Image (cartoon, rainbow, N blue to C red; front, side, top):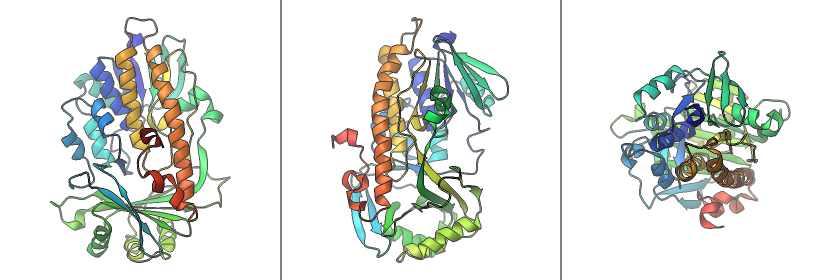
Length: 414
């Protein structure tokens, strides 16, 4: 029945996890994604699962085990209750703080997406892959059936459409209007590098931490050093690493777009990042200096959107993941909240989805959105406050990163 079909716009983490819970509940769905395949873009990254391990298990079928999820990590290290994230002063090399990160996983995004897209009905998979290349341009709903119109002129109908296509969500624009849905641009810019490194630089990174570290400079600079794809079964010459750096840059703040530079080998971006790195103490300076000129690099002005309530059109349109709460990255909360969204949706649908009702999703969405709106807004605002604080030396030690670590406020009542 069309009224029970769910249209998922976006094939990222939130989209595939949503498909998994719908499959578990026996609710028909289709995924639509504008990229032609999972690996159609050269850009890839890694992210952390810090407190959403249990909700993630709730979203996945039994055959996608915790062991298989762990195999999508950036390395082959065994996670434990003693895991930590060290914080360094970039100007002196001093350890500022060691944050407990028990059982935290650092996930390779592309491997994770391949895993969580497994186990779907073969017909659905084929439909999904055929529908890669779909770009949404319009949504119409009469409060019972929602119609999605794509750039190729085709239309699809269902009882519910879920926008899961990330920070630049077209569904959010169509749901709230472009002005209300617009991302809030930030003075911070971020350079992101994925690269191989010479063995000397690798050795220096591993002395800092076996996997990853977060660092701050008194002049308002953040830097991240971590593994991106590393296995003890392969030689160090094959390993890749993630280096990030962010700082406040007001020049062009009111005129440039969010995407300052596209992905690619960008000598000027690297030159500017390496110039910043000359302010660093060792070994941080020499690690950045070792980045080769052909490294994969991109540079963005950061942005966020504090979650606002929306009209779900009588239970026919909603948002999930980064589409609902795009946030700044310096405390690693985005994926964790997206996983929590899907687990919350799963719980609400399991309890309140009424397949024989003329409005099968309405009550379930009321329950789901009441959690999402409050939690999402709080998470975005806290991430905004944290990112502002960690780029201000006088506020750094009062930031949520220093006071809460990687835990969300909602989990500990603080």
